[in-house]
Amino acid sequence: MTPQELEQYPAWAAEQREPASAVRDEPITAPENRPICAEGSVVYLEDDHRFTVERIGQFDVHLRDEEAPLFGRAISREEFQRQLDANPRNGGMMLSEQQHEALVQAQTEQALSYIEDYLKDEFEITEPDFSDLTRIDLGYTTTEDEKHVIQVYADLENCTVTKLVDDTLYAQERYSSLDDLNQTLLSNLDFDSLMEIDLDEVEEHEPLENVFLTDESAAHDPTNYLAPYEPEVPTGTKAKFAANLNAIRTLKQIEQRGTPDTEAEQDVLAGYLGWGGLADAFDPNKDSWRSEYKQLKDLLTPEEYAAAQESTLTAFYTPPAVIHAMYRALTRMGCVGGNVLESSMGVGAFFGHRSGSFDTNNAKLYGVELDSVSGRIAQQLYQKAKIQICGYEKADLPDSFFDLAIGNVPFGQYQVTDRQYDKLHFQIHDYFLAKTVDKLRVGGIMAFITTSGTMDKMSESVRRYLAARCDLIGAVRLPNNTFTAQAGTTVTSDILFLQKRGRVLEQDAPWIHVGETANGIPLNRYFIDHPEMICGEMQMVSGPYGRVHKSAFSGHKSLNSTLFCPLSRLGSRHFALSGVLYRPYTRHFASLPA
Image (cartoon, rainbow, N blue to C red; front, top):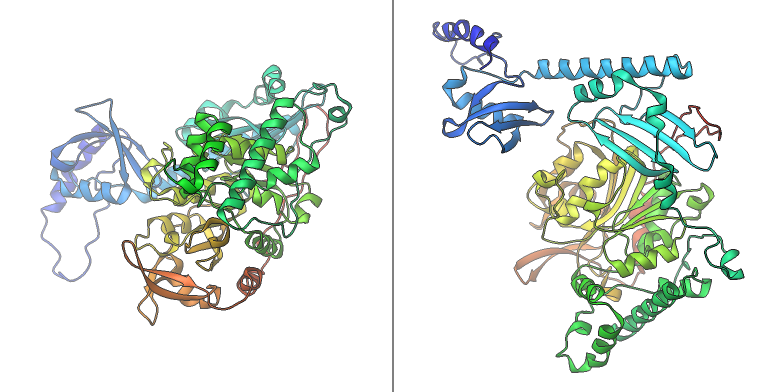
């Protein structure tokens, strides 16, 4: 314990020895002078183990093991308080919620005071907008040649400062606490230092102009491919294989000649459907696939082949009817532009079938794709987009930046290693949702297809995490045969529409919980309360690991017709794009999109 805590301890101990209240059935109020646990306190937890409190966060307490100082650990505030109470050596020490809230409030007010003084001195702004603490603009300027736009903003809730160059992440500094942010940066804000960039580094990553000397390439303007509303999709595994092979050959020809793809080549590239359901093509012992196996081996590099083979169980083509229905719902919500992220894009089906309003409103597209072949095809199709070929956990993306995140996340019973989210222990599909929350701006919308397990699993941890940070606009349960035609698989999945709130709010929303239908089928409370959002009828069927439930649709309706009614119910306008005041002159400040 700290000296202050040791001084408080005798008084507290004496009070504990006083006769107990005569009214035994009344709740006992903890004495106000119990020692307060603070950063730097020494505590004794399980097995009388000695720790030093390094940081008390909003949700967790971070500890240093005094017997092994190089190792630390973090436990929830609730579990930490339980272990404090269990060991008498802690002298009744307790966490103070009021003290913590007051500290955060004081540090926030100090931060806003620093920023207010800076804005007044630098830009003569006397009434800054502090309505969104996750995006407080600190500066907006252009380089001297007016070729590049530089933006800097602070996020007080996540203790980060982000610098963008031409709407692309240039740098993001994360501070250990709000106090660290105050002392290190905000107390001494300087416009020139904030706006400083390495121009050579920026231009090194820009596409070179006039590299190719042909008239065709000189006249080429970057474009974003727009797919036909109802493209012809091959039926049958052999036809799908042929389309994939044709697209890969076309990609390699384009890359070899070094000129942008033509419109006809884009149609071929867009025909790439991925390898979901095509495991036979990778089996050398399948006589009926021997020719296809050899063609793949000859065409792909060892790395490309390994990635393609690995994707046979996870890479499934999303039917355009589902994508169109999602965009119609987003349009009714008022989401028609801004910064758009597809975090597991394949070749970019959600970009290709985007609503025309996104082009009208000059939406900026950002994509991430793990598979090299798929990512390179996407880069050819969406030449104006910012596409990174890497895992989502390695993507260089700013927090609190995107207006919309849309896509079909990978399903799987495994976890992704990402230090910021490892402690959550979420499976890959739930990890994508959790990480994307941080990428959205306040008010931004997530429209993701995910496995039904996200909503129906008995563990509530994922749903509680999301509900603390987002409002559920609505959900739609898809028929289990949605992906059958193209992927040859039946899987029950959901479309979730979530909107990010401005602060974390622990709450007990109905959709956190799982109940049972009248037929005894375990189901998320949202779908029990809103059966009209289920496309089909929930049934219990036999699976490889026992009985499972699925949404089976019986009838002859098209997928488009099936989705129309449930998605049309999501008609409220939830979304608003912030206006932008932009003038391309150096050293100026303007309101930027949050």
